[in-house]
Image 1 (cartoon, each protein chain N blue to C red):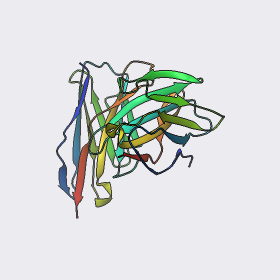
Image 2: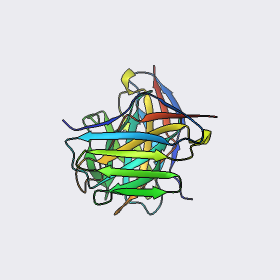
Image 3: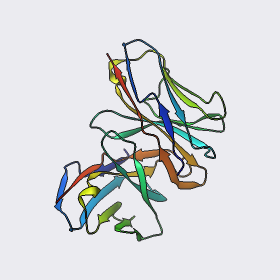
Length: 114
Length: 113
């Protein structure tokens, strides 16, 4: 069974610091996503990435956020200057184009900003 | 504005009974709707997709209905088991072909032994 992996599983950082969350999507998938889930709240779309560029982004995904696919396997989310309200679970997901039922989520990175 | 609403209160049912969860949406015209399961501290896991031209979809003990007139989907788990206890999420594509998915708040189901 193919799976999406994410590292680290937990990250604690000080407010104002930069963090990079890493994901390895499923190898033949073409769409990549980052979602956020604040404790006790719903899963929120942040950004989708296709063909080496951002396809869609939400209002949450402001200038403090960026995404990259630096090589053929990794997909990263960078938060430049973290705020307390960035504390959340961050999920990466990937999807095979045209197969909308194949969106697979990773196990998540729990980010705590102090 | 666009909304996806699920019953935010937890649903407790006895083992063996059928659980029915509701997803209502406004200001969307989705071509399909998805249901996911989420366990605490884990990522959502895709369960079922139903398209706008399908009234009902089944997978083992799961059944999903989709009423585009009522703008509602119902998710049923028959012969429920304690292992079915989890939060169930519905999700829609925000715009056709965008591959941008918006999730409901989820309904927490607890199946009592």
